[in-house]
Image (cartoon, rainbow, N blue to C red):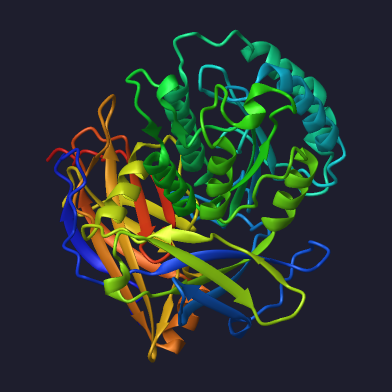
Length: 498
C-alpha cells in the first residue's frame, strides 16, 4: 500500500512557489448538498443511489459520495515534538453571522440589531455560532470570534454566549460606529466588501467541512448606472461577484443573505446608494455557494436554518467530460429520489479553463500567508534534524484520509494531492520550494487501511538559514480542501569539538 512517500527537495529561498508539472487530469466537480424533510430538519440517512445530478441538462455519473457529520472530534494524542492542526481549540463546524454596518442603511441598522439580539438570546445551541461586524471602514470586527490558538471552544452544553448578546453587541457597535467617510463611493465600497468576504473565507478555512455565513446587509450592486459612476458609463460588478462566489465555494462557505432595506426608503426600489440589483447580488451569492436566498428580513429564520444546515450534509463528486470545461456557466440540478426530501446545493458553476496547477498554486500560496493553520484536512507532523546536519531537516507527517476525496474509478480509489513545505525566517517573507505531487491509487483494501490508519508522508528538506518555523501544506485537487500544520524548527546542536 502506498501510504508512505519519500522524496527529496531543496528549499533554497525562492519566494514564489514553483509549480510542479501537471498532467491533463480530469477535474472533479465537488458539491456540498444539504437534505431536509418537510419540517426543515436534516435528513442523514441518504445513500448515493438517492441522488441524481444534472449538469447543463446532462445526467452525470457520481464517482464520489460521502455523508459529512460535523461532530466534534477528539484532539489527537501527540508524541513529544509532534504538532497538529486539530489540537484544542477545535470547532467541527461554524455558523458565522456577518452584521454588515458598511452596507446597512442607518434607518435599518437599529432594527436589524434589535432583531439580531432577540434571536440570538433565544438560540438553544450557540456552541459554534460566531458574530462579526463589517465596520464602516471595511474591517472585520469580532463580537464573538472564531477560535484560534489563544481561545478555547466551550464544551457542548455550556451556557451559550448568546445570553449576553445585547451587551456584547452594544459594546462592539459603540466602538466602531462613525459617520461613513464621504470618499467611499459605491464602487469602492463594493470592492472593499468583496475583499472582506474573501478575508472571512480564509479565516473560516481553519474549520473543516461546511461553513454557513448569515449576511445581514442592504446588499451591494451588480452594476452602477451612468449617473452613479465617475465616467458616466455603466459599471458591471458581475465578474467580481463570480470570482468571489467561487472563492467562497472553494472554502466550502455558503451564504445566507438577509436584506434589511426598509419599506418606503429609496433603497427599496434597488436604485439608491446601493446601485442596481443588490437583491440579485445576494441571491446569486446564495445560489452559487449553496446557501439559501434572501429570507425577507427574518434574521432569526436565517440563523436557525443556517445552524441546522451546517450539522450534516453530503459531499458528491462527478467528472464532466474534458470538453465541457468551456468557460461557460453550467446550470446544475440535484434531485433526490426519496419523496419528501428537499435538497439545497449550488445552482451552477463557471467551467473555467485553467492552466495546469493554477488552482493548487493559488490555494497553497494563500495558505503560506496566513497567521494560522487551515484544518480542512487533519494533519500532524514532526520536524527533526537530518543526519547530514546544517539546515537539513526531516519531516515526518500524517494525513487523515477520511478528509481526502478518494474517487472510485474502476477497481481503484484515487486521490490527487499537492504538497508544499515552506520556511519562515525572522522578518522575511515565507520561502518555499517546488510543489510536490502526491497521487494515490488504492485498491479497496488499501483504501480501507488508509481510512482506518491515515496516510504517512516523509520528506527530507533543506530550509533557508535562520528559519524559525516550517509549514507543511496539503491541497486536495478533487475537493479544493486545504490544510497546514506549522512546526518550530529545532535547534541544531553543534558537533562536539575534537
